[in-house]
Every structure is written in structure tokens, then in C-alpha cells.
Amino acid sequence: MKPMTKSPLQIARAGYQPKLPNALKGNVVLKEGAATESVADQDDIKKLFPNTYGMPLITFEPGEKRNYPVKNVGVILSGGQAPGGHNVICGLFDGLKALNPANKLYGFLGGPSGLVDHQYIELTKEIVDEYRNTGGFDIIGSGRTKLEEAEQYDKGAEICHKLDISAIVIIGGDDSNTNACVLAEYYAQKGEPIQVIGCPKTIDGDLKNEMIETSFGFDTACKVYSELIGNIQRDANSAKKYWHFIRLMGRSASHITLECALQSQPNICIISEEVEANNLTLSDVVENIVKVIVHRADHGLNFGTVLIPEGLIEFIPAMKKLIAELNDLLAHNDDFNALETDDEKRQYVKGMLSPETAQVYRDLPKGIARQLTLDRDPHGNVQVSLIETEKLLIEMVAKRLAQLKAQGVYKGKFSSINHFFGYEGRCAIPSNFDADYTYSLGYTASVLISEGKTGYMSSVRNTTAPAAEWIAGGVPITMMMNMERRHGKMKPVIQKALVRLDGAPFKFFAANREKWADEEMSYIYPGPIQYYGPTEVCDQPTKTLQLEKGL
Image (tube, rainbow, N blue to C red; front, side):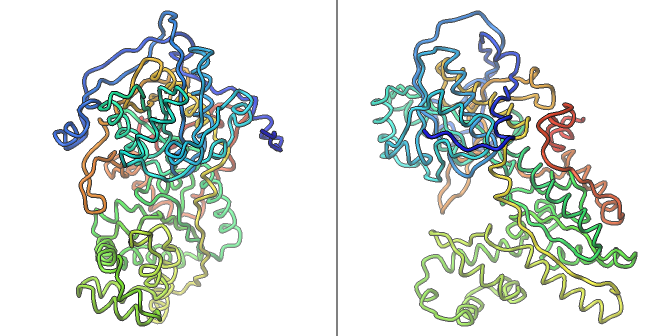
């Protein structure tokens, strides 16, 4: 492999040695806790996973030196990128070599499809060393192929037998780890000597629970976005003439938006879960934004920032119902697809929707209505992540402000700029927290494998303490599962974690947002991620984690 051209920071980071929990610094012994059960639908999950259900929680403690047999391991990067993925592989590699120098690590290329299509490379020390503490997933690539069919599992077993692989580590989000659990159960039922271990990845932050305090990449991504928001707020406070509407990645939950608000203190921040809980309409959301803009204008402040979660549209009950009707109406609809003009399609849709949702559809700006009917996935469903919600809100806010200006209520000037921050944060050089956390997750996976475990997710807890005090172990993936309807069928999936409105992070935000809306000097400018310097600057976890732990 040809060495990469590196920046001075990359060269310096290559020499950074991630910190490990004390329990992983020497010989390890496993401590098993009580038997577990799924978070919901216990009978259904138990029937589907008879071999991997009810397993105990596992924690690691320092122990006596032991001899471990040789284990060849395969690793897969699944789904979207998240900062720290390379360090999971580095930790896994180092852990395997520490347990038995004869262990080998193979990387399946391009995500889960690499397992099925038998595309792989052996990850040697020379390769792994090139990617230590770097962002991205380019060491082996990633993909979104779902492992759902017996034929796929059997093809995976073929290549494992060929390479004498006895364990697979799947690094991914909730869907990918659900697939890992299904794969572990399938191999256990078939008597295949192949273990499967998962690692919790997603910048969205919605793969979390009592045993998984945070998913890796969330810390780095939020720090990247918060730096950008802070920069924009400094510009807004300097120019004093623009309202910046900023949409942030995170379709299924508002964790990123909330964390960025806690770090930067914007004038307005919308939390999708609150919108849904209060049964707000799109007009209600617009009216709440307009109130702040008018109030600030009354004090001569014709500028500000608005943070918007990517999945907001799906949390507005009326819009959620509209999207559901559109999905049913337009999926594989030949009559609709045969129409030639946008106006013909708009009229067709209005005539087929229920009266309530038809009115919601009519009230939408034409550009957004067009996105709802034209930008669809292969299953015919609306691609919510492609909807430019920030532009929709700008258009509706401007229209409402014009009405208030005509009535003499609004005397300010509204100039807007829209932004979307998503891909900017997914492959950043990982923060010290993520570099340490992911390395520990990978190292933990190596121990779980060497102890013969399967159907577990690598777990590292107590992450607001110094890394030496972190608690490493494993959590049965079935413990996190429930049944949900997917594509018309009930399926077992890892339960997504939404922003808790009774949780400390949201409560802190709710207690302070009026002050942030009113004051000119409330902005925080977080600045870029710091890798060298005082620990309180370089190693601190997210505000979300600190508030959840009462710090």
C-alpha cells in the first residue's frame, strides 16, 4: 500500500497513543452479571433469538495471565462514516495481537457486501499504522448492504471457513448491529463456529442506553458543527444583518441539534421530539420563530441563528401523516409516474389525499411539495433527509413577517442565509474523546472474541471520568431490541433513543433558551477541536454526557 500524503497534524496525530481503561491495560478476567431481557416485546424477541437471548452483562477486571488460542477475525465497517472508525480497527488489531501474536485481522471491503462477495484484505501492522487516529472509513470502505437473507449468511460462512475466521466484528449503527445480532443467532442455530460482535457507531447519537452511554463519532461531529455555528454567530454579531437558518444532520432524533445548542447557545433551536409531544403544526413552528425575530427586531437586533434538526418534518404530526399517505399513494404508482408536468402531478396528489392532509399539502411552498413527490427512494418512500427544511422555514417565516409588517407589528428587516451541516462532521479527525473511546471499543471487542462470546456489543461506560476509570465489557444486543413495523412487517430492531424531554440536557436547554433568544451576548464560540493542551480543553466529553451525569 502506498503511504498517504499527510498534513503536519496528521503526522503528529499518528504518534498519539489512545488512553485505555485500567482493566484493559494488562491481563483481563470477565465478570458476568445477571441475565438480561429485551427492552420490550420480550416473548417475541426470545422466540426469534433462542440462542442469544437473556445472556448476562459482562464487565472486565484485571486478572491473571492466560494463554489464548489463535483467533482470526474479520471486521466490517457498515453504514455512514463516523469519526473514530479507524481507531476501532486499531484497537481491535492491537488487542488481538496482545492476546496472541499469531492472531490475524481481515477487513471486508466496501461494507457488509465484502463479506457476501468475498472481497477482503489482511490488515497488517503496516496498513493499520497508516490509519491511526484518522477520520473516515477509507481503510476498507463502508457500505449499506443489509445482511438479511440466509444466502448472505451462508456466503459469509464460506469465506470465514476459507480464511479460518472464527469471529466477525460489525462496526455500525442500530440497523447494522441488529443485523449483527441476527447473524450471530443464525450461526449459533446452524452450529457454525463463528462469533459476531457489534460496535456502536453513529454521529446521530440515537444508539444509546444504560449500557451504551454514547455512540462513537457523536462527540467529534458535534464539536465540528458547533465550531461552524460559533463562527457563523460571530459573523452574525459582527454584521448584524442576517438570520442564519442551520439544518443539522440527525434524521431520527435531535441529539446533534440539542448538543450543538448546548455548546453554542443560539437564539432559536427546534427540538423535533418537543414539536411532536406538543402536537405542533408547521405553522406553529413558524410562529414560534417569528415571535423571537419580531422581539429581537424591537430591540434593534435584526440578526440571529436558528438550529433545525434534519428530521423535523417527520416529527410534525400533520406532516408525518401527509408523508405516510404519500408513501402509500405514490409507491410504484404508474398513473402518477406517467404524468409529465409538476402541475399535473400536484393536482393529482391533491385529488387523492384525505381532506386534512390535502390542506397541509396545499399550504406548502411549491418547491417543498415537489420534493415530497419527486425525490423518492427505491421503495417509493419520501427521502426526508433531502427535504431542505431550512429553506421551507425561511420562506414561510418571510411570508409571515411580511404580513406582520403590513399590519405595523414588525418594524425590522429580515435577511436570511441557509446552511446544512452534515458531511462536514462525519470524517473529521477524531477528538481525543472519540480517539480514546473507539480504541477502547475495539480493544474490548478483541477480549470478547477471545473469551468466546457472540451476540454482544462492545461497551465502554463511565465515560465522563478519566479514561483510566472507564468500565469496559459487553452488552447482549438482544437487551436493546424491540419489535417495530418495517416495510409492512414486524421486525426485531434495536430501539432508537430519542431526546428525552425529562432528561437533564433538554431541561437545561429549556431553562435557558429564552435568555439565549433575547440577549445579544449569549453566543458561545467553541472554536476548533483541540488535540493538545489542558485536559479540560482537549478531553472533555459532550455537554449531553456531562449533564446526564450531573456534572
